[in-house]
Length: 186
Image 1 (cartoon, rainbow, N blue to C red):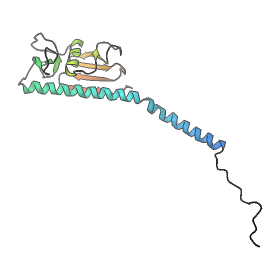
Image 2: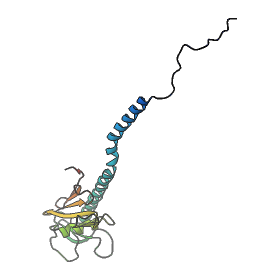
Image 3: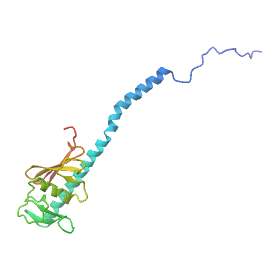
Image 4: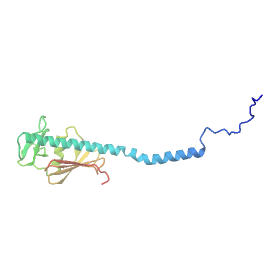
């Protein structure tokens, strides 16, 4: 009979596992990938803060525009004192508009030509426009407020984000311009 079975197979049997060297190489590659990718994930918190400031800046800009539109729609062509921007009781929803028709301050006494000309004016415009928005103060302490208001030039304010002070919102009451500086590395 020709049905003889060989006593042993001449072909060597292959191992079905990984060698130690292959495992070490895979671990090293995963480590390199982790080192490259980890900073991207660590910066997610900073990216979220930057997005928050951009959103706040957009809301502030929209509120400035709406106040200017209301000023124009009511027929003003110069300063307006205690203009009711939002329908609320008291002076919370009122703004003093400057000669260009942009928010300059929020004070109940009459002023013939209101101007944004000190930090208190910067502090008064913010909460009137951003009802229930982030807090603002003249302090850079993040436990005191979300933003620090600074008067920087005639008719101009800058609101620094206290968690990342290099990020800010700039407001120019001469033309209603609102800019968000979102470069934390400047």
